[in-house]
Length: 417
Image (cartoon, rainbow, N blue to C red; front, side, top):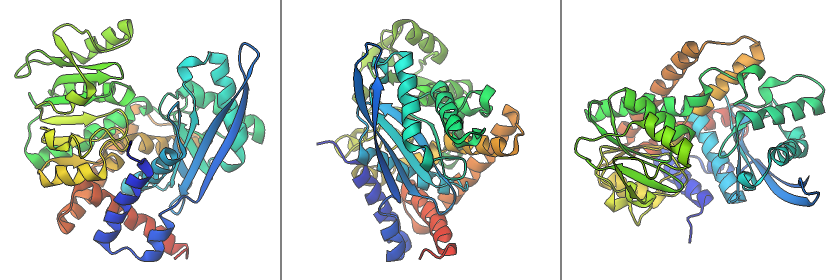
């Protein structure tokens, strides 16, 4: 049976609460979302039929600021996943110290089966169903799995039609022409690189020649592989939903990430790239590499395979790739892991920058945005490392302790507890 993401999230909260002696009243409030919307979306398909889709929006906690979080279009979207992701977004924003809460949305759909017109009608219908509960000062959505800047633009346009005014800050991840931020396209990966740099310093690892395997070659995974390759790391294995590849010469070989990307554009997968052998996504996780970057879906590192991992450092670019049971095994084995709520927070941080720029109607260069991102990510890493050292705990628990401390302060200041 698949691991329940919301149960995993609550186990992580429990661990942090126990470590820090969290008051019961605050713990109870943090055990459930403030609001969960379930909406029915009837869509006229191109063939004239009407098909009804189900959508969700979980608004977890807004003690520190408006709810914030992506919208995913995926056939496996379910309410427990959306609730868990909205909780993790609450923790993520607090970990990096930005004044936002946590939300998450999704529609149960395989967008690859829809025409562009059907996709647009579905995107607009979702906003019509939830628009009274979102907005620049209420809840700010963003792209997630299988959603794009184009979809964000449709959603923004629908929202502005409904409220009768321009409100670019109601959604982030927009095209630059509609108020998107420079650097947003690769910000999740760039944020991950900034914290990876800090982690390798702690471990005494030099970038040059250090081997890296990246599971997941979507936006975040592909950008991170390209950036690390430029910094001198050896990318030895990559994967997508159709399979994984590893260089024939693990000892000194490396992949040209740009060439693999070109191969994928032509063939639809990374598999079959010259000079590699094909392995499974599961086998990629167990390769003898220095750094492993899970950048695909949840729950890929579990109690069943955690003992077989050989990496010295794991940087979680995906949301929830490691189960709580696996955390214990990895920590006991001395493997350092940088948790998702820190490692992949670059995306939401630049989304926050986008909101700030929308509100002021003044826009930064890519260099300015990345400079601000680097400082926030390094400060967040150091805050988490301090708690890791103080409490003698793993990095994930340290990140949750950091986040829960900050959310608790906001709740107390509001008189909620």
